[in-house]
Length: 119
Image 1: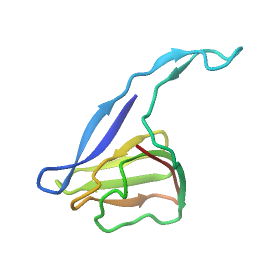
Image 2: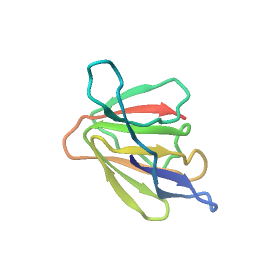
Image 3: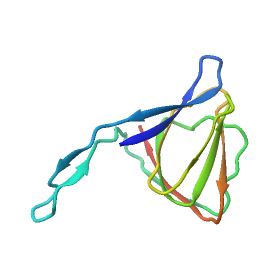
Image 4: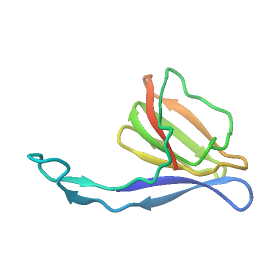
């Protein structure tokens, strides 16, 4: 499974990094066809977020966390000038917990919905 990591750079800024974690076909319950399953490291405290407007000033992530996009589209701009859009099904690992951070903006029709899963 592919994901995007927002990483802190040595100069205190942020940049995108592409990552991947393996999926394997596994039967998760009797009578259910095998599904692609992979582990996402986490540390409890999952949060569901829904917002009609998600435009921010530059900010670091409050903690290292997975952002699992459920609904809507956001555009993230990192301090090196990179810009990417993320929508339903996309995975982002926000790891820029210090420094300048990144800017997040809602794109298109609200609401924006996501799960935040602490690492």
